[in-house]
Amino acid sequence: MPEDALRSPEKLVSDWQQPINRWADLPNSIHNDSVATKIGMRGGTIPGTVHLNHFVPLIQDMWGMPWYVRGAISMYYTFATTHKEDVRAVMVGPMGQDAEKVDAYVETPDEKIVCKGSLSVGNTTELNYVSSLPLENSPPSEIRILDRMEVGMECPEVDDVVATEGQGTGTYKDIVETPTGLFQMLQAGAPTGTLKKAVGFYGATEIRNIRGPILVGTEYRRVGKVMCIGASPKTEYVWIDSQLIDKSSDDVVAEMRQFTRFMKASSDLW
Image 1 (tube, rainbow, N blue to C red):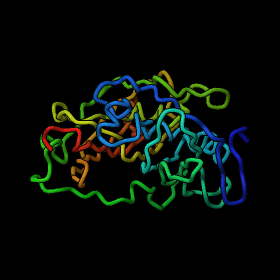
Image 2: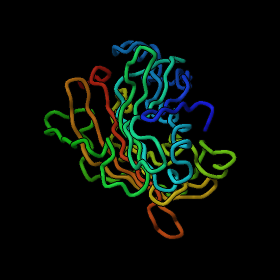
Image 3: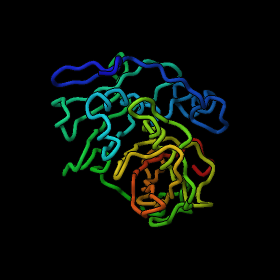
């Protein structure tokens, strides 16, 4: 068992971790203290996708390499943390390699839920958490920041996607070990020329290994498509699905559903 994974029959818990805000100096970014406080945040936020990595020791203790072959992590971000705040990952359910799907979340010491969702492995028939959420489009009259986008628009296709972070060691040498490494490869971005100036932040991420593991040093092709555009009282949002494709076989090796919000308070359009 990895040193930072603590097990009970119904729960697997990581050690407390203190993520560093490596993006604090980015202009017009929610990770920047001055920008974040102007739109009502406590300070520059840690990207939600960083918290996906807290599950790595739990994934490896629970399933090991099979998760990297055909496993999923699916998280909806619910509370923004700041520089070096304590967080830990928790998996809940019957623990063991035979478990196909478990509930999961990241929490703070005072039990605020930073993100919530599920992890799974194999050919589970149940939807992962984020995939189970309805996609609700809004009327065009409610969209200003994202009014250049349309459902079905394709994101820029990239033919030379190579892992730049997340390489494992030991058993996991030469593969992308971390969910954030997989996220970087699968992040399709918005269709060209569609984004207007506004502060964005991640709302949810689901990463699914289909025919893994994803190899370091191998070139993949990435495609993506807009699936939903909508608005809430404080944000506009877009759901984008992307795929990573093996260039030699044309097989889809990994998929992602990404939910991104844009703060109305940060835009002159509102």
